[in-house]
Image: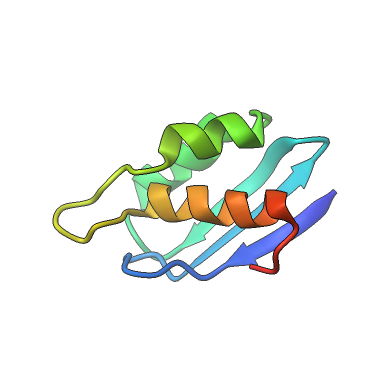
Length: 86
């Protein structure tokens, strides 16, 4: 199981931690941000296909920020799947 840490840009959350095992997401956790909503994201995507979650969350916006914690998570997944350092 490969573990990743990502530092989002333009959001209230400051770090995203997650693992990918055999293309599936596990142990998704956010630091800071909207605690209840971000815990819900982690629960909803547990065991889900990483590529599908990336595509679903991409482009989700929060207010006028031009991004969101979910959108930033999609970027983190994309980097992880491409083998780029987070």
